[in-house]
Structure formats: structure tokens, C-alpha cells
Length: 306
Ligand SMILES: *[C@@H]1O[C@H](CO)[C@@H](O)[C@H](O)[C@H]1NC(C)=O
Ligand SMILES: *[C@@H]1O[C@H](CO)[C@@H](O)[C@H](O)[C@H]1NC(C)=O
Ligand SMILES: *[C@@H]1O[C@H](CO)[C@@H](O)[C@H](O)[C@H]1NC(C)=O
Ligand SMILES: *[C@@H]1O[C@H](CO)[C@@H](O)[C@H](O)[C@H]1NC(C)=O
Image 1 (cartoon, rainbow, N blue to C red):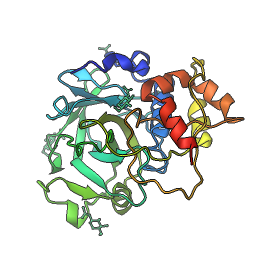
Image 2: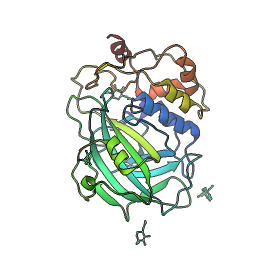
Image 3: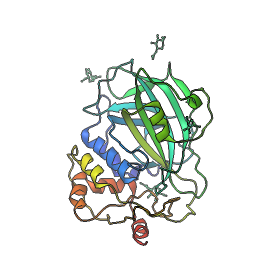
Image 4: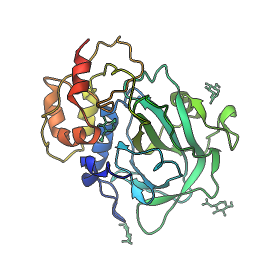
């Protein structure tokens, strides 16, 4: 079931070797992938993680945005935190909230759609050994919603499952309706949860995609990548650009309605922008980004055909 492993160019770029923290380039790649998959700013209005969450199913670390089968992700992964160069020095007394949310297929209007909560744990900590990455320690954690593997509806397209880890400060209080251990999987608004709890210090993130069968829904319009986001990400990127070939333009008017967004050929694609933005994309190593999320002509065409 790991046949897709080789499809991610980024896999080669991100190293999780023992005692290596992730680099600024790795973080820029994470940011570019989240932007390109339309997770930022549609799902998360801001995204400035200090590191990467290393998520391992069957001892294999996922690559950012990797397509995985439902069976592979059915059991609880092991999770480690790999800090970036500017990350706060981790301490065993730090507490974190970590969760997995189904951010739906690309193109879903996340401002009006709830996400499915597949896992939510408060007050997890880190095992600070000699070297990074650091394993998550659940010894004194509260598992609000136990891990429930992704199970997207058949034909609904590739869903984006996002792992996020936020620092909890000493004033953290779980909201009344999500404070009971064992609360069943259900839908919630991640942005409301973050707002209500005051969780804003994003420590680490990652995401994967899971699809059930062939998508039967039509291709939704896509929005252009926010070049401001890319510019910010690119400031830490030392990598050169592979190429911009294969990228194109696909944008919609701001008011275009976006419902379900799957495609039979490339639901995970985000559009790129034209003109001046090209220079920015170039600096980012756009070829890597494209390789990682799989832009296809079909999606670009669909995006343009409004
Ligand atoms: C890992 O890196 C830290 C900080 O540079 C160092 O103190 C430690 O000895 C290293 N551990 C190993 C196992 O190399
Ligand atoms: C859990 O709590 C106990 C009791 O307060 C403490 O001794 C222990 O160090 C804690 N473990 C972690 C991983 O925080
Ligand atoms: C919990 O209650 C808040 C209002 O306080 C609401 O916004 C949120 O949707 C509720 N969450 C769940 C999971 O029901
Ligand atoms: C992931 O799956 C989608 C939907 O099947 C496909 O279009 C896309 O190309 C895949 N992405 C990668 C990186 O394999």
C-alpha cells in the first residue's frame, strides 16, 4: 500500500534523520504545500509552524500531503516533533494540544464547512531525549477524542487530513463541550476551537490525503495561491527552482462558489498565479511543490473554464 511513496518529490527533500532538526527549507516546503493545497489561508488563516510533525504509520513517516489508503491510516500512528532552526527549545514540562482534522477536499469553502475531528488530545508532552525528533508523550495527556482513522465517503474525492500541534499555555481550558475524555468523533469548527481556547502558537504540522474510490463529484473551481504567502515562505528557502513548467493559471473570482472539490484527475492541485508571481514561485522551488501535490492540466483547465 505504499505504492505512492515514490510520487512525492518532497520526500527526498525532507530528512528526518535522528538528531537533525528540520531546516528552514523544509519549513518553507511545508508552508508552500499547505498554501498550495489551499489549507492556508482557507482552513488556517495564518500558518507559521516552528517545526514538522513526523507522523509514522507502520514505521514509515508520511511525506507532506501524501496519498495514503484507508487501511494504512486505520491505526494510531506514532508521532514525533522535529523542530526547525528557530524553534523554542523544547522542555519536558511543555504541554501541547494535538489533533487530526478532516479539512475536506480541496476547494471546499472552509469558512462555511465544519471539519471532522478524528483525534484530539490536550496536555500531551514531549519525551526530551538526547536528540530530535522528540516523541509525543501521552502519560498525563487527556484524550478528548480517541484516534479514529480517516473514512471519507466513497466518491467524495481526496480529503485533506491535517495534524496540528499547538503549545498550551498555563491558562488553557478545554471548552465545556470538548472537555470529556472519550468524546466521539464528530464535526467541529477548528477555527472556533482555536479561538475559544486561545491556542495560537503553532508548534508543528503535517497533512496527508485519503480517498475512497474514484471521485464522482465534479471538479470545483480553485483559487489562486496567495502570492503573499509564498513570498513569506520563500524568504527562508534556500533551494533553487526546479522549473515552473506544468504550472499555469487558475483562479476564480472571489465570489465563486466552491462546494465539494474533488476531481477524478487531480483534486489536490492548487492553482498558481501568473505574471509577477512567477519570480516568487521560482524561488520556492515550485517544481518540488508541484511534484508534491500533483497539479494536473485537467484541474487547471477546470479552474480557468468559468
Ligand atoms: C544531538 O544534538 C544535541 C544538540 O546539538 C547534542 O547535545 C546531543 O549530544 C546530540 N545527540 C546525539 C545522540 O548525537
Ligand atoms: C505525569 O505526572 C506525574 C505526576 O505529577 C509526574 O511525576 C510525571 O513526571 C508526569 N509525566 C509527564 C510525562 O509529564
Ligand atoms: C462547542 O460549543 C461552541 C460554543 O461554545 C460551539 O461553537 C462549538 O461548535 C461546539 N463544539 C462542538 C464540537 O459541538
Ligand atoms: C493524490 O490523489 C489524487 C486523487 O486520486 C491524485 O489526483 C493526485 O495526483 C495524488 N497526488 C499524489 C502526490 O500522488
